[in-house]
Image 1: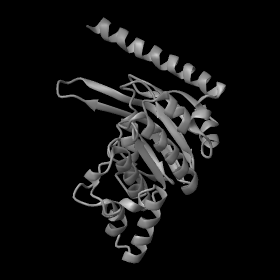
Image 2 (image 1 turned 180 degrees about the horizontal axis):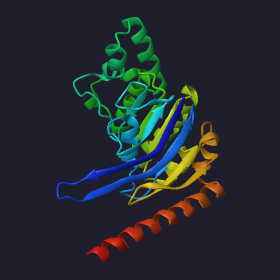
Image 3 (image 1 turned 90 degrees about the vertical axis):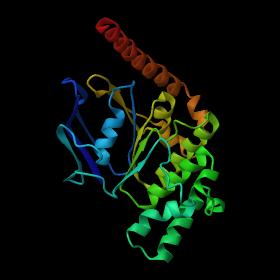
Length: 267
């Protein structure tokens, strides 16, 4: 699997005749099994980039290609996990996870085997008959992950999937994301506002700069690999982790101050 983003730009034209340049000349490539985290201040185009890769938006310029084929819309090989699970409230847990394979016409026995395996993997085997509204936020996100994996996508796109969770649940879910990444070998792009989360989960990490959104800096990091079978808090206490965190926090803080300065000047 190869995902290629070539000279991608996105401009939103507004009704008043002005325009917002959300992305400008973004290029990168991602190979099979890589875990990429994307970080940056508000307005840097992180979610716009993810939505273009998902096929929800068509870029103004450039293209996204998966295995050489230009992305022109949503497709099963690109699975999406949203900030809130976007689950079907009228279905129980099993039916949510089973939805994709069922729509493909997969035989019931095969669907059931896939669903049972995934629910066991995410620790929800005992909750398969529960209604979605009976689950906590963390459990709902586990259902969303299982539902995404049930379609066997080549690449998993995650838009702030842990952002709404409390600190303890978020850390547990970070461990689950790493576990699923290693066990499935899937390629993952994770959007987050948390520097710590981006460092922990990103085998590669992009820091984006805003107005227009562009890649400011890229890091190759050891923490995701080392955290798969380790205590996450111990990994976060490593001196190198702390140094990178402070470096990136300072970088983003400077960007935020620059944005605020521009806003005040414009006012």
